[in-house]
Length: 486
View 1 (cartoon, rainbow, N blue to C red):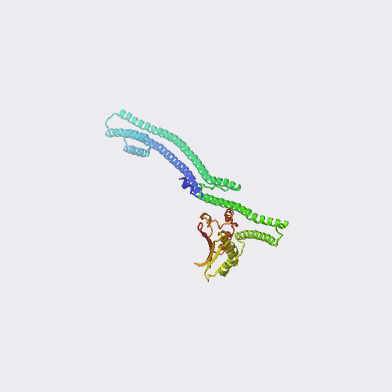
View 2 (cartoon, rainbow, N blue to C red; view 1 turned 45 degrees about the vertical axis):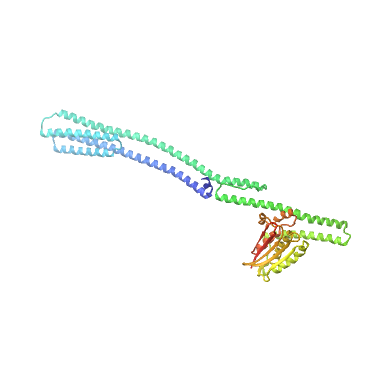
C-alpha cells in the first residue's frame, strides 16, 4: 500500500487529500441536514397531530352537546324534526371519531377514541330505545333512562378530557424526546466535526511530511556537498516529482565526484607533466650557467636541444589544454571543405616515422587508391591522425607494428589505426575518450602523455558529424577507428 502511495504525484496526493476532507465535511453536513430534516418533520407532524386532535376534541364535544340538547327537547315535545337533528349530530360525531382514529399515531390515543366511540354508541342506543317508548306513548322507566344517558354522556366527556390530557402529555414527552435526540445528534455532529478536523490535520501533515521530508534529506545532502562530500546516494520514498529530482541530484553528485576526481587527476597530471620538463630545463640552465660539461660544442648543442625539446613539450601541453577548453566552449570554428583523407594520412605517417624508427616500429598503410571525398577541416583531421598515431607509437613496444587503413563505409569513410601494444582493459574503454583519463594510466605505466589527445580527437570527429570508437584485446593491441560522413 505504501509502495503504491509513494508513486502518487504531488497533485494527486493533494487531490486525494482535498477529496477526503471534502468527503468528511460533506458527511458532517449531510448528517446534520438529515437530523434537522428529521427533527423538522417530527416537530411538524407532532404539532399537526396535536392541533388536529384538540380540534376534533372540540368538534366531538360540540356534536355531543348538540345531541344532548336535541335529545332533551325531543323528550319534551316528541318533535320528529328534533329527532332528525339528533341523528344528524350523531352522524357528525361518528364521522369526527373515525377521522380522529385515522389520524391518531399512538395506541393509547386510538384506545381513548375507541372508548369515546363505544360510550357514544351506548348513549345513542339508550335514546333510541327511549324514542320508541315516547312514540308509542307507553309507560317506561324514564328516570332510569335519564340516569343512564347522563352517565353515558359523562363517560364520553370524561374520555374527551382524557384525550386532551393525553395529547398534551404526549406532546410534552415527544418534545422531551426530541430534545434528547437533538442533544445526541449535536454531540454526534460535534464528534464527526472533531474527527474531520483531526483527519484533515493528519492528511495535511502526512502530505506535507511526504514532500518536506525528502526535501530536508536533500537539504542535508546539499550541505554535505558544500563540504566536498559526494559519496552516498539519495533513495527516497517520495512523490514521482521529488523522486525525479532525487535521481537528478544523485546524477549531479556522481558528476561532481567525477569532476572532483578529474580535478585531482588534472593536478596529478600537471605535477607529473610539468615537473619533468621543468626539472630538465632547470638542470640544463644550471649547466649552461656554470659552463660545466659544456665546453665542447657538441655537448652544448645537445643541452640546448634538450631544453628546446622540453620547452616544445610544455608548449604542446598548454596548446592541448587550450584547444580542448576552446572546443568544449564551442569557440573553435571549423573550415569545412570537400577533400580526401589519404594525403593527410600520408603526411601524418611521414611526421611520425622518425619517432617510430627510434623504437624500430614498422608503419604500414593499407588504403584504396581512390577514397570517397568527405567534408572536413584538413588541419583538424590531421590533428586527429597525429594524436592516434602518436598514441600508437607510444604504447607499441619496441619492434612492434602499426597499421593505418582507410576504406569506404556506408555513407562515408572509415579510418583505422591499429597497434600491437598491450591493449586496453574492457572496463577502461568507455572512459579513455574523457579528458585526463589516460593521465593516471600513463603515470602508472610510465608511458607519459596528458590524456587529452583522445578527448580532442573525439571533439573534432563529433564536430564533423562522425563518431570514433576503439576495439581492443588484452596483449593483442588496440584499433582506433573514426568515421566521417561523405
